[in-house]
Amino acid sequence: MRLGSGAAVLRAEASGRDDVRRANLAAVLRLLHFDGASTRSDIVAATGFNRSTVGSLTSELERAGLVRERPGVVRGKGRPSNVVEPVSTSVHVLAFDVTATEVAGARVGLGGYILQVRRRLHAGHPRDVGKVVAMIATLAREMDARAPEGSVPLAIVVSVAGSVRQPDGLVRRAPALGWADVPLVALLQAELESDQGPPFPGAMLITAGNDGDFGVVAEHLRGAARGIQDVLYVRGERGVGGGVVVDGELLKGVGGYAGEVGHILVRPGGRPCACGAKGCWEAEVGDDAILRAVGRDPKESEIDDAISDVAIGRKRAIAGVHKIGSQVGLGLASLVNIFNPGVVVLGGSLGALYPTMEKTLHASLARALGPIREQATLVRSELGPDAQLVGGAEVGFVDLLDDPTGTLAALRGEVDEQGSGVVLESRSS
Image 1 (cartoon, rainbow, N blue to C red):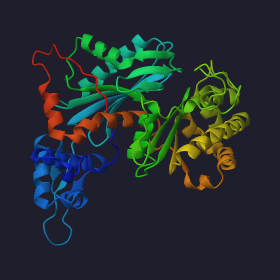
Image 2 (image 1 turned 120 degrees about the vertical axis):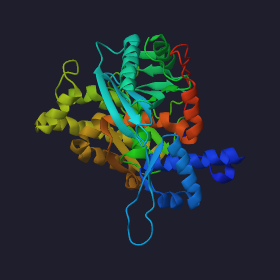
Image 3 (image 1 turned 120 degrees about the horizontal axis):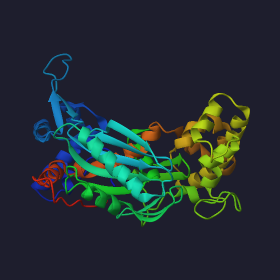
Image 4 (image 1 turned 90 degrees about the vertical axis):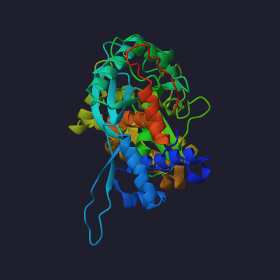
């Protein structure tokens, strides 16, 4: 997927008048989606379009319901430039994050605004795929029903803590969930089609992806690494997920599996990993490892218990997190050597505990890296538990940002007036 807030297609690259118009509309909407409200003068400066072109483009987007204009503030002499802002309730993406403990969902509006969040704990072990899919479908229906009248659903996007094949959304391996070769997108599509509620638009995107990929997209576009072109994101959970942005683009690999950082080997013959190997990074620094390090039984405690133990100053907990920090630094050293990022963002439990493990983590990292260590800045996630929801939503906005009026026309035209017979398509971003 294309990242960043630049124009979707340069005007010089468009092949005809319609393509030029579509590219120019995309450039303006993309700017407003990522940068928020802007004056017409700001849009002229950012895009290079003349003032009359900007006026025409913003008027067309306003007629489509995607933006609105309001008078600007008078500063000095002359007429104030109108302010143009995205209408957050005009369209929405339904984004989900499936972890070993819960399913989180969000309705996200244009401009990246999180309009609604729902979280549901699994009833039992998440290996029951049918129950998880049903939960996602139920949450999707509930959140869509709460959207303002006329708001168009663009996509349902699901983040999974595991390896997700592209473009069909087959979850090849998700050890923390107990999943292997699960056709998640196809199952969700079937669940939504069998539902007796109002149909979703037939042209709506339904897709799934890796939690680390969505996390790095979110932090790169809207979080701690905004504006940085080379980013490494690592999320601590029951496992360890990762995502990489290289030169402003998401690194996917041949099948979409790039960034499976949790299964790099850091301790040969170490703790058994859910993937079947021993000594994987996630087996040494994942939530279960952290719980054991602070003196808790992973079967009886949650990671929040460990975080609380540290917060109240339990010495054993602090010492255990220091030890985990060394292992985190060891794994990060390998990744920094490979990707040479400008920023490393730590999310999930690793982000929450970073202040406590910072000293031992940096010491371990410095020993393994040497001078290259100076180029990588370590930061905590700014988006926290919402990172996967925000990143997933951005995947859902891609088509609209590439072709604003065309995408809306397709979605609005696909809904059957009788409320039946709608075929949901699965498409990849």
